Length: 579
Image (tube, helix red, strand yellow):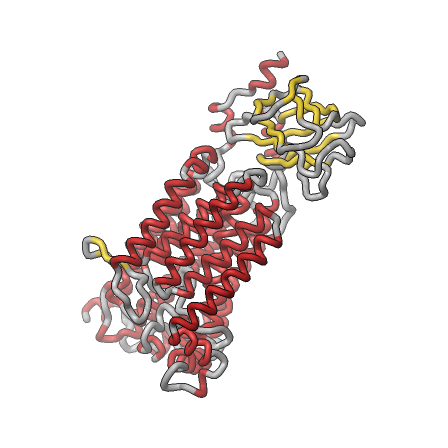
C-alpha cells in the first residue's frame, strides 16, 4: 500500500479514469493515422534488376527476381511474336545477383549464346537469348545502377518520424498502466505497473535495434506494439498474474521476428527449408493429435516439460514458409501437388482435433497461396468443393458442430445455452459506449474465454468502441500495406509469404470479431496480438516478419541487406568485365 499511496492514486482513481478514458482514444487515433499515412501513401516502387532488349529496339524491364517470358498477357515479359509460347521461359535471379534462364517446355525452344538449352542455364549481362527464334539481348543492372536508383527511392521515416509516433505510443501505454493501477486500488498486483513500464522498455529497445541496423521503417512494429498494449490492458484486467508470462512471450516473439527476418535474407537458404518446415509442421500436428487431451471439445494444446502451448499457432509459420518456398516458381507443377497434399494433411489433422476455427484459417490461407502461383480457378474450385464435402461429413459425424451453426444468428434465443458468450459480449461491448468504462472496470472479463475468444467485446467495454474500431483498423492497415508491398516485392517468395501472413491475421480477425458478435458462427480463434495467449503472440510476430520482408522501401526491411553491405559482398562483376 505504501507504493500505491506514493503514487497518490487511491483517492484520485475516479478522476484518473475519467481523464484517461478520453485521452486514450485520441492518442490511439493519432498513432494509427500516422502509421497509415506513412505506410500507405507515396508511390509504389518496383526495383529494376535488368532488362531484355528486343529486336525492334524496345526494352522490357525485369522488376522481379522470377520473371516469366511469354506471349500471354500474364507474363512478366510479354513478347508479341507467334513463335513465342504463351509461357515460354523463366528468367530468375538470386540475392547475390546471379541470373539464369530455363525453358518451360516451349514449342520454339530457348537458346543461350546460340545453344539450345534444356535445363537452367547461367546468364551474363550482354548474352544473346532466343525465345522461339526471337533474338534478344539480356542486360543485368550493375551495382552502380542499383545505387543510383536507390537514391531516388522513397525512404520511410522522413516525413512522418517514427520516433515521435513511438513517443505517443509510450504515453498511451503508460496511461493504460496508470489506469489499471488506479482501478486495482488496495488489491493492486505490483506486476501491473511493472509490466507496463517493461513494455515501454521493450518498444524502445526494438526501435534502437532497427536504427542500429540502419533501418528507418518502424510503422509496422508500432502498429503491432499498439495492439500488444491493448492486449496487455485486457490481460491486466482479467488475469494480472499472467502478465509476466505474456511479457516473456512478447520477448520470445520479437526474437523470432528478427530471426525469421535475418533468415529470409538468403532466399536459396529459405527455399531449401521447405521440406524440413513441412515435416516440423505435420509432426507437431500429429503429436498434438495423438497425445493431447481434449479441452472443451478440442485437442489443441500440448504440454512439454510443464510448458503448455498450441502447436497449431506455430504450424501457421511452417505452413506459410512451405507454401511460399514450394510455389515460388509457376513452372514446377509437382510443387503445387506437393503443397496441396501438405495442406490437406494439415487441415485434416486440425479437423480431427476439432479445432475447426484454425482449420478454416489454414484453408483460406491455402486458397490464397495456391491461387497466387497456380493462377488456376479450377484448383480453387476443386479445393472449395472438397472442403464443402468434408464439412458436411464432419457436421454429420459431430453433432455439436451443427449445434454451433444452429445458434448462429439466433444467440439471443439461447442466452443461457449456445448463445451465452455472444450475448454477454454484445451486452458488454454496448455498455462501454464510445470511450469505455476504463481499464479493469468492466465485468465481461469474468465470463469464460472473454480475454481470448471474445476479446473484442472486452476492449469495447473497457476502452470504448473507438478503441475497438482502431484495433481492427490496425490489422487492416497492415493487410493493405502487405498487399501493396507484394506488388513490387523482389521475389514471389516475399509476395506469397506476406500475402499469406496477412490472410491468416485477417481471417482470425474476422472470425473473432464477427463470431463474438454473432455475425458469423462462433469458432473460438484469437484476435492477433490482442487476445491473451503466449503461443498466439509469439507466432503472430513470426507472421509479421514475412510482411516486413516484402517491404521494398529504401532501408525499410531488415530482411533485405543494406546497399553498402551488399556491395562489399558482391563486387560489380559486369563493370569489371566491361573494363
